[in-house]
Image (cartoon, rainbow, N blue to C red; front, side):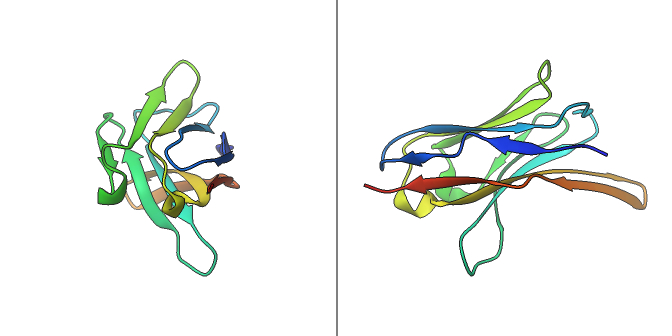
Length: 119
């Protein structure tokens, strides 16, 4: 069992920056992919960014060039650096830790952290 906890959500003006953290104590980054999702009321969770077990990043088009995902192996933490924030980035951001081993899957979610971008 991995306990996942996000932090760093806050209110920020358009154009500002935030860094979200996803702490997963005891995680083996070499076997898990880490995914950041976001969700707004009435909508499904949307994948925003991901980093694979071999540190390959992925971003959806709307955040490319503005968001950066990274790992801190020493702290068992993944970060999502968000720059040039837009009003449409407002959402609850969730961290998902996932791996598939043969037919078995391990899938863990944090409770989410609120990001609000407004003037």
